[in-house]
Image 1 (cartoon, rainbow, N blue to C red):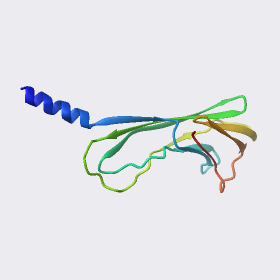
Image 2: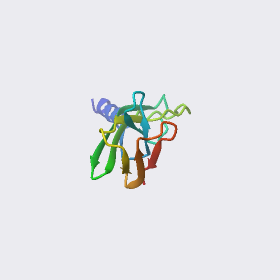
Image 3: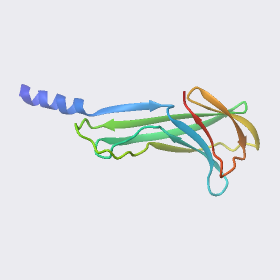
Image 4: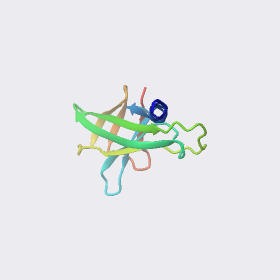
Length: 130
């Protein structure tokens, strides 16, 4: 019985969830139809044989001409010894609240940059977390 419990403990320990908060890069883009959205790339490489993206979320809030992006990613590492070398990304998308045209600050992960709305569809505005 003790041996079975030990094996269960090892199997459970091999699976680990990693949470990434406000990491990587956030870009403001224009969706078809003209609405603005933020695409956040967590900046990690996921192996298809060893990693699972459990959740990927982002939000954008507007306060005093600042658009603040928050993101959260949960990645499950299965603990296999040998993983494939493919490299999948972790992405989240969220809508920008309706805002008037003009100049704003884009804030993400402790960094900020100027942002002009409307965003040129060919030139997204991006910011990397510090």
